[in-house]
Image (cartoon, rainbow, N blue to C red; front, side, top):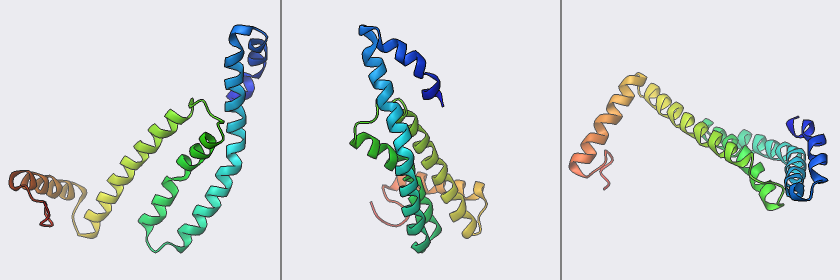
Length: 141
């Protein structure tokens, strides 16, 4: 919607020789934003089919995590981006992955009968033990 609202301003900027590059960048971003919706629809369909066949919930969630990066990659392949949305997409993807890691840790703790704070405490104790001995809990270095 923002790209459409900026349309008349970009047309006016195109008339000034010094700002033609700004308008051309806007056109690339606008076309990329419109066309990536078709890519998202196809990607979402494929991920939904793959997640139905996946055995575990974690695998299904991880498939859905790659949804936005795949769309951004396709935009990059066709040169339809100036990365105005790419940086925001990366930041949100990484914050989503961090939250997913927290959920996975809490789930593992709940399955083993520990509270979230108990799971965090045992993780802290394991990290301290590994730092002192140079070994992890599973016996590997």
